[in-house]
Amino acid sequence: MARCALGRSLGRQFRWFWAAYAVSAFGTWLAFDAFALIAILALGAGPTEVSVLAAAGLAVGAVVAVPLGPWVEFRRKRRVMIAMDLIRFAALMSVPAAYALGWLSVAQLLVVAVVVGAADITFTAASGACLKALVRPGDLLVANGRFEATTWTATALGPPLGTAAIGLVGPVASMAANAVSFLLSAAGIRAIGGREPRPARTATPPRPGAGDLLEGWRYILASPALRPLFFNTVLVGGLIMAASPLLAVLMLRDVGFAPWQYGLAFGVPCIGGLIGSRLARPLLARFGQHKVMLTAGTLRACWGLGLAFIGPGPSGLFLVIAVELGLITCMGVFNPVFATYRLEQLPSDRVVRTLSAWSITSKATIAAMTGVWGLLAGLTSPRTAIAIAGLLLLATSLLLPRHDRTPRLKNADQAPSERQTLA
Image (cartoon, rainbow, N blue to C red; front, side, top):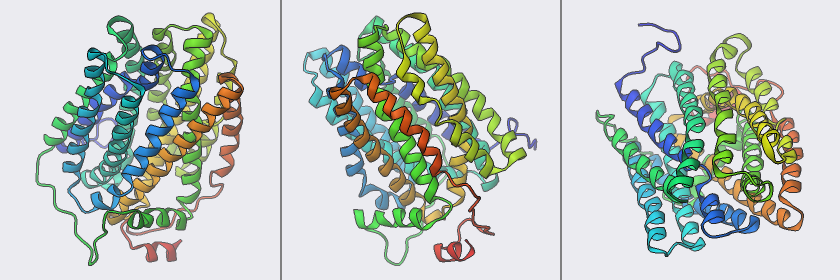
């Protein structure tokens, strides 16, 4: 069997899993910023309303997801993933239905955002455990590299096509397409086939509740390898996403870009994500895991400030594309290496709870920071708030681990006490 990164076969089951991921990723990015765009274009919302919508949906979605992590840990992951796909399909399809009937409101968008946010967190945690079960440990980087390349391909194609569809068909067209993508994703996961074994239960299996999910946070905070990356990735994601709805308002309302230009500005730079995901493996082989994460993680924090200087016309559009290209290329290198490293540090019986805790913290942080930045933009301006986010983003590189603290383990599934002793 060929062992090169591109030629390596990960099996039929992984191919179906990858296909399901690809179709849902494409649908998600086809509906890029759909909630904000619908609120701005169809409901006339301003920067504060758009930010509150984004923040509240994430925050309540994260709270709803809290009891689901421990519950999913001891359930068959594919069944959970299919259920979450079907829930997202039903919730998202309610938006174009309400719009067609003239009933659409910000309140409905908020409810849909909450349902989709909770389902996203649950699906992501279950999919991490599913991936770890489907591929060998040595193939995790290859698999994550393919997911990363797929994400950036979808991100490059989705926003321009989605915003073009909004201009041609209406503001809810991309959301309807996203809903259908989750239905197709559920079919792909169902096609993986084979019998998924029921996870082994501990003597006292966890009950659905926040107390049981604390195990995930305890594991992260007790790990010298994961703790700094946890704080770094949560804050980087929070600052980038807090500025996102304000950037939509700045570009679409204040500067005067058309929706298709807005989509183009975020679609074209995603070529950098493809480049970065292809570079991740050779860079890892040459420089090592820690050095690649440190360098790429530092560089990805250097671009956000440039978005505060967007102006009208081709020069402004070029500036957005250049800034996003640099940011996304660095993320394309960092993300698959980080995702692989994180899975390598997690024993199989803690994957879902730990990833759920990580995801809930990330979503809650994004929600809080989006709300704060919306208020800040209301008191100052979207441009000023984006500049402050960019300045703070520069400081996040200080949270990256300067030294390699990876435990030298013989077995990735050792108990926490054994892992801590070795660390």
